[in-house]
Length: 132
Image 1: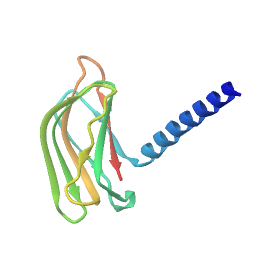
Image 2: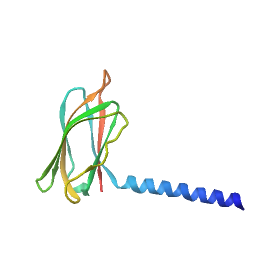
Image 3: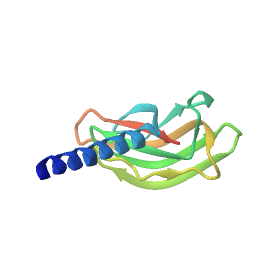
Image 4: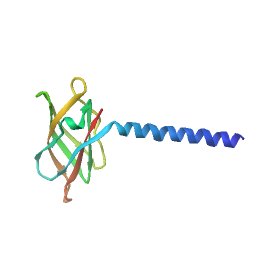
């Protein structure tokens, strides 16, 4: 009886963690992805109202390290938020959550100035997520 109780409690705890992880992942929406080359480049991810409103953004990098030099978020109402930084994200890493100024907002587009640090590899892949 005691073993059964321990098994049931453990199963409930694991189920809770899985459900929590799914709920958190459900708040993130893939807005777009781009291939990043070894040269400084400017790429735009068009978002639009169809994706809904967001309060934060997150970036994930795979394949190689990427140096982000500037990010400009253009909102549907014409305002923009500029993030100036020389930050490098390693392959497989994701950024901290980037808070959008104001309340939840529709994003028109996000413009990245960046370059991959590939050391002879074929570039990197960058994914942009919106967080509700």
